[in-house]
Every structure is written in structure tokens, then in C-alpha cells.
Image (cartoon, rainbow, N blue to C red):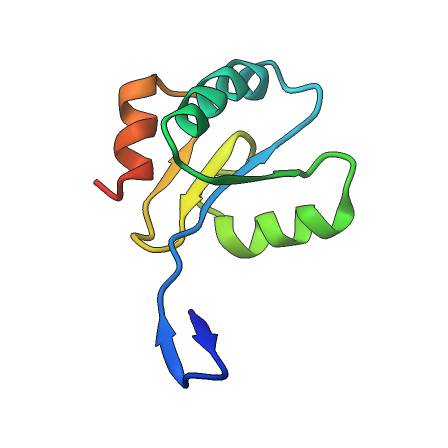
Length: 98
């Protein structure tokens, strides 16, 4: 949740998050689809987990033992996740919260 301090109003900010590994072949496949999604106006935050301990901790907090690896995607507004590589239609539906 994001709160504006000056106006005392709070609202949810939809966050699309991707966790990936630098050398992961499935993640590389998904990177192309993530770029396509960004080209359609979606904002996706990406975190590399294999070489960044802080990002790996964030991944563990979001993944909660449901996937076990990357790529892993979470829409923090809808709570929907994707574990592993998928097709573009499924990725876009995830981004839309469907």
C-alpha cells in the first residue's frame, strides 16, 4: 500500500515483479516476453536472485515455498503468481490481474 503523506490518502499500487537468474535459460525466454509486456505499457520490476543475496531474500518472502525456483512472477495487487516459463497470453493475463 502506498500512502501520500501530504494528503493523508492511501491507495494500492499494483506491482508486477519478476524474479530471475542471470544464467537461467527459461528466464532468458521470459525476458523477451517481459519486454513485450513493457512495450504495451505495463511496468515490471525485475530482480536477479542467483547473484544478489538481497534479491534472493525478497524472492523467498514473495514465493513462500510455492515455486522453488525462477522465473517467478507475482502481481502484488491481485496476488496472482506464475512459476516457471509461460506463454505471452498467460503472462499478460497475470499482469492484468486475471
